[in-house]
Amino acid sequence: MKKFLYVTLFIFMFSFIHTSDVYAETDDTSRVYTITIDRFLNKNEDNDSVDNADGDYNLTFGGDLEGIESQFEYIKDMGFDTLLLSPVFEMDDKDFLGYSVTDYTKIAERFGGEEKFKDFLDKAHDHDFKVVIDLPTTKTDEFTALDNPKTTDIMNEYYDSIDREFIDFNSEDNQEKYKDLMTNFLNEYDIDGVSMFVVQNVDRRAILPEDIPAYAVVLDDDIDASNFDYTAYDSKREKIANAFGGIDIDIPEYPKDDEILMADHFFSERFTSYSVENNLFPGTRVKMLYPYLLAHSGPIFVTNGTEIAQNGDTLNTIHPQMDLWTDKEVHDFMKTTYSVFAQHKELLNREIETIEKDNGLYAVLFKTDDVDFILEINNTSETQKLEITEEYVEDGKELSGLLLGERVQPHNNALYPVIDRELTELYAVITPPGLNHWYLISSLLIFGGFAVFIFVVAKRSKRKEHK
Image 1 (cartoon, rainbow, N blue to C red):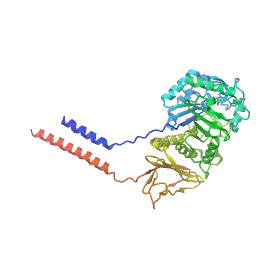
Image 2: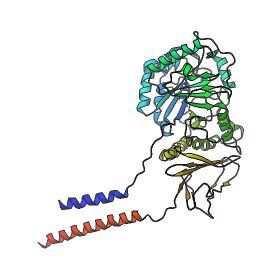
Image 3: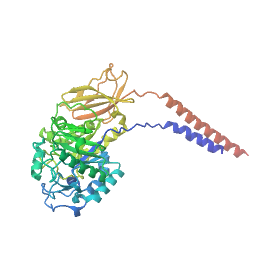
Image 4: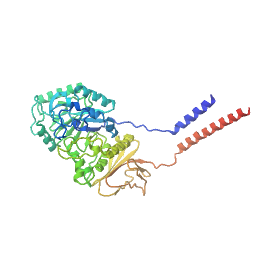
């Protein structure tokens, strides 16, 4: 019995060596992976709408919900917690994107129909994904058409190709009909949010139920998209794509939490097309962009194929067939980068202060209740040495690089991180590691207790031998 007590005491003392930090998760941000269903992965050829053995880009490729299901872990590894799907309503057989709606009350058979859609939602939720559906505002027979929608050139080309118009939400009758259709849709299916490309002034309360998170992509700054929960602006998207697709260009500062950050979407050129135009390597540009997006304390949208640096700037090139088995370098980088941010979720509950913003060199300070962080992006044409004074970091603190691993110690009351071109680093602001006195004391107690335990056991053994 005494021996058992000694062992128990030893284990109890040893347990004090292990410490763990627990951080509260934020609940106001989504890491959204946007998927063109038809172009992702064809897992069930029995539901293909057309025979496209020749790979005609203007026809469907057969991607379906089962194809997405098969890659849940692949998507989650990159840090995404939300799936945004292109439209799922019944559509023309030859339409690859899904906005040629023929019936807002039915789920497309090519994706598996109603039962498969419900099964997909259940499986996505089992994998801790939220599911957001992009809602078309495409005119069907029960609606009247909108004159002069504000769209992108790629959207115009696409809508011309499917011979469709937009619903006019200036009409109260159209508003009521659409809201009824979407209310029935959302009552039927366990969906976590909806998104919409907004091409006219509209109040979401007039066309959507209010008890569902709603994301808007506004295609013109003059559009008033009132009361959407989160909004992305195509003009901001273009600035981000231009900055990260080029070099020596100012990087946009972080917006408010209710603004979505993105670099491309279903109806824009791929942001990597900017880098190709500027003779820069697309994969490197993705590696600079992704930490910038992850550090946003609001939602981010990332288009499927970004992880393999898919390129394109026209309707015929921006939605190629997804190749999940291509070079995994960027995917692995995104996976590793996300793992760092996942360990430091407290940086999303922060105050933010810009340290430097000059022709592609961008450094921001994130102040939190626990640890401060500095994100530095060098999108210039040369190596940069930044001076960080006591105005931003308390004297005596140092920087610990979390992505590249650089350690920056203070010199003359300032910190001077050096970062090569086309790299992004996230630093934790830390107290220089020194002797941990409590750790030494606990270690001495533990090993001293262990020594006493061994001594007592040995002494008892000798007594038994002499008997």
